[in-house]
Amino acid sequence: MKFNKTKYNTKTIISWLWRHHKGCRRQAILNMIVGLIQVTAGLVGVEFLRRLTDIATGKAEGTLLVMALIYVGLIVIEFLCNIFHTWIAAVLGVKTQNNMQQAFFSRLLNGKWNGIERFHSGDILNRLFGDVSDIVNLMTEVLPFIVTIVVQFIASFCYLLVMDAKLAYIIILVTPVFLILSRLYFRRMRRIVRKVKDSNSSLQAIIQESVQHKMVIKIMEMADNMVNQLEKRQSLLRWQIKTRAKFSILTRIIIFIGFRGSALVALIYCLFQLNSGIITVGVLMAFTQLIGRIQHPLLELGRLLPTFVNSFTSSERLIELEELPLENTDDKNRPNRETEQILNTSPAIGLRFTDVDYQYKPDTRKVFSGFSHDFRPGSFTAVLGETGAGKTTMLRLMLSLIDQQKGTIELYSGNGENETKTDACFFTRRYFSYVPQGNTLFSGSIRENLRFGNPDATSEQMFDALHTAQADFVKELPNGLDTKCGEGGGGLSEGQAQRIAIARAILRPCKILLLDEATSALDIATEKKLLKSIKEKYADTTLIFITHRLSTVEFATEQITLERNEE
Image (cartoon, rainbow, N blue to C red; front, side, top):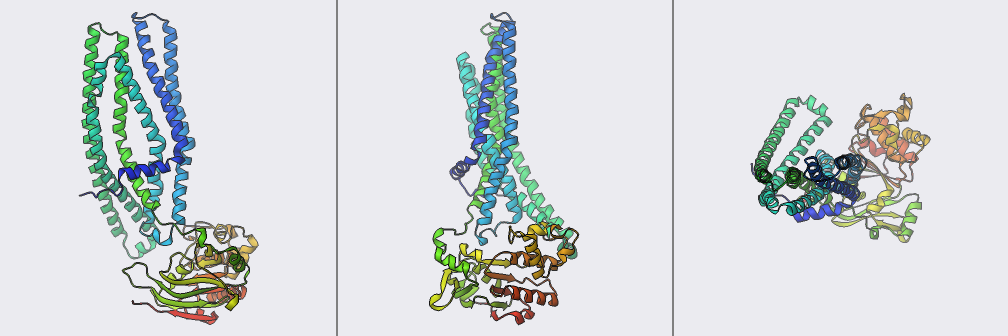
């Protein structure tokens, strides 16, 4: 299989990583300091091991016990550094990861409504957890470690250069080969790893959807089909991982042979030096220690190459999320204070469409073409129309989730010369409350769900809203408002969940209440009681009801029927 080229170049990714490094800096600096202390203790330990050995073999003078205690102390320092590093990861690591997840989560929630639909929710979860974890690991663990091992490499090489220049050059002879292989490896592996990560996201997506729609799968007898789909994607993932493993193993074998070969040559050279009496046993032990401390950083860099590849690929996937457009929250779009005050204090406000055009994509039909309608203050409008006529799109335009290409959408109070108006935008969303189609309850208690409408609502206010929504059944539940709901209102009937969603919406202080097929799961008798209750209690509120049911029309003061635009 041919792998596609990566979307972002290395310079772009490094620049992005630098911008996001600020939140990880404290942990990274602490890890780097601990690492440098550990390297220093290790190199000093090499010198004391040389002296300790020479004293023990009679080749040098000194107090053996003192040298041994110092050497043991240096080993303890290295051990304590390891413990402290683990403590830093436990205390700061999770917090750093949580902060980055929170930042991306916030961006997703504050992004434009129609920007995120090209990502599956399973893919987004995979990015928020797996990819963020990769990035945090790179910036807090890997990069400080690289600084540490580079310092170790330079310091060890200089130390060995002073002791024996020839040996130093033999040890680093393989370095250019390592650098060339690393570059080739990095390019190839980035493309492979991107495919692996995308396949993992695809697997999570099919599992998540299957769990969500388990009932449909059972009734349609498609369980075996879904398992087969999963197997196909797993098979592709296994092939991709196998390809990655083959390439990685081949590269590691070449690097291993090179390093072990140079180490073997260096060791033979040292043994001849010892046999000739040019060096002592202590110097030989120092040499062998330094050989390891010079080659170890290069071998570690080889081991870290997959981590770099993973992190760069994760960066690409997070950059894609970060590039999602944000809602326009520019203050210049905010209504002025006088307008806000009038709208806030008006008993009712209206909503006016004037010559509005809208289409989702340039090459698709227009949902609206020159659409105009005035939803007058305090009116109850029933909006009818066939599927695809634009009813839900109209609600999205009202709420500024999407922006019209032409015309105006205004909120207003008063009439004629006394009219105060402002364009619908992000800031006017505060005047709306909304009941969407379907079951939109969150997992948690009924009380927690109602507080989405008004976080400060009292129990009395909640029961009042439930009564208006014909949801008095909550009082009869064993735990009342504290009754737990499962995912999507699990444990409640569709009708019960829908009435709680309506209560949640009417708890929110608003001037315009939008109901999108909000009574579809209710019987006609219950629906009529609910609409009558809402109409009486919210006589000053502008009510807009999207419906297919003609029974709703008898409660409406106005009615419009949208027709599918074929342009």
